[in-house]
Image (cartoon, rainbow, N blue to C red):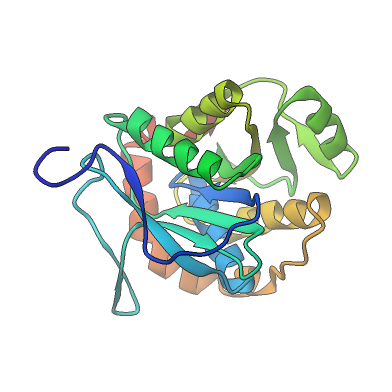
Length: 241
């Protein structure tokens, strides 16, 4: 620990009983698809904030939404403790990434989670209204039955790639769900595509209509963060095909 800040730790602000939860996670990437998707899931499932990431490797930034201060790297759970969500609303550099990944996986194992699903965007010129997946072979086949296509090849970089790699080592099932997304602007349509895929595969019923209706508000609120991602894309999370 240096200057009072740990390498990385999940600081729990509320003790809740978790029941081997599936974990959905979203980070800053193309179209802010991960962040938008997770934010929408949290809202629709009325999830409660249970923790935050403390790390000397996080940039000294905070987030204001409608005048309310909130930590940029947060952990949530539903009331039954069966679903958790991880959302990060700041750009992360490569320095210290492994510490952040280890802290997430340590926490996930401690809570008995068997599966982590990363939601992210693929930089693209246009939508194709399809969800894509990268996972173990048997899971890819099951997803294909729910109209979720396999990614033939590509690179998942940044913290999503780090989490997926560590899942292999730790015997936690790691899944990437991806959608083609706008290269330069927040993309709620791509986020909606991913959530609809979650609904099909995980038998969820998350309404996406507000995501599609509020494109202008979302663009206004999240455009600055999207531009930061575009400016330094090679350093941050991303999926490249």
